[in-house]
Length: 534
Image (cartoon, rainbow, N blue to C red; front, top):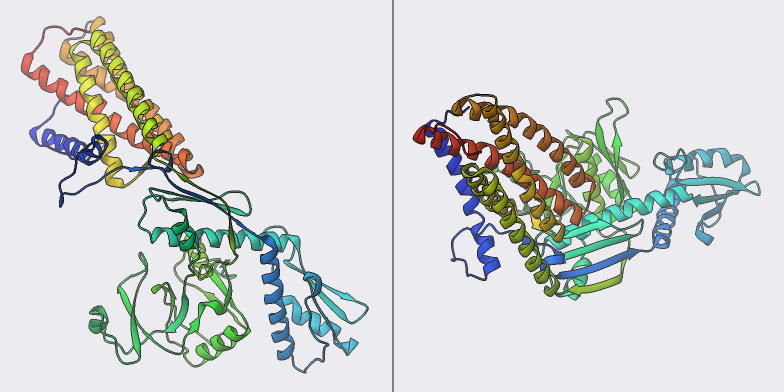
């Protein structure tokens, strides 16, 4: 274990120095030193609690979701009744008191109308209930009422969609690591570090995404498309990031498509035969008629689903799609199909979002937190250095060098990855400093025990590193599991703490175990000591 050939020494130093040098832009920024232009600048981003920024709390009105569902159902009922064969005469359809009402003139047609209405309802999640209830009053009057379970599901879908729309809009600002999370069933919390103008953020959230369905021009030459040359009547549309596949762009017909404002819903679904993840989409009556015409005239041809000028998907039309509903299938996982469904629903904000709280957080509090955090870090590091050097001598010096390298590597990796440092992140940083020394304490104490047992110097060091490393790895693996769970299920500051902790654990093992072992090995081969000052 103490054998370090030249190639391994060079590799370890290269990794350590590359990570450590990546911390220089962050250190220069903290010191107020200008970074040279044209030189890469991997810098740690500061969170809202450290850098200041804009904080906005948005709230949706569930009554608006209910009204939208009633209006959509009224249009669907009209379309369904008009399509019935033979025709059924009904009174005017109304939506009084949040319900759909109409009378069937011929009571013998009640069962036929009920059968026609049932496909318009769906299951409300896993509640075992339908999203609409259909009742017949006075023998011939139908009343369709949205169930509370259906309203709750619609509100949840609307808020999920709104979060994605808000996130896409804010990402267009080029800001780093905004926090956009659900806050209760009807609210969205938005925090954008470094943005000192809440009004600009509010204006941005008022923008609406543009969703389109257009036919792909299969006659377009791939070479021309790749160069951005569009055939007459076409336009070139790039794929969204991560969706390109073999080609980065598509040529689509400029006219004859369908706009996304005619799409009423998109949900994750499953193929009943293969159980594969799919996406169900639903149009309103006009969109359904256009979609039926589009698909019936272009069977076997692909059409593109375009959001914000980027192609999300380009499925092939296998058959004419009638009735205003369709299934998009492909090599989807459950997560990717759900993301596609959310993206399709994200063509526009599904519900108005009202600002119920807004404030601008200045950087003064963050600067004070950074200063106190640096003081805590400096005092803790100094105390540890004194203790470890007094206790273990030369091996303590190696531990201190590993600790300093560890701190630089943490900052460097955070800068390269582009993570955000928050106040809990600073706490995680300070905690990592203390935990980083644990590995060296275990190793040095084990070496001391082996010397007391009578082992020679080289053998004691080798056995000490070998046996202590097992305990070190076990302890740090459990810490990484805990931090990973915090990152997966936490939000905002909790994630910031978890990120710093995970990075710190990995770098501390690298510096405290691998680097110190290399330094000790080189010293032992060079000095050949008869005893160790431990």
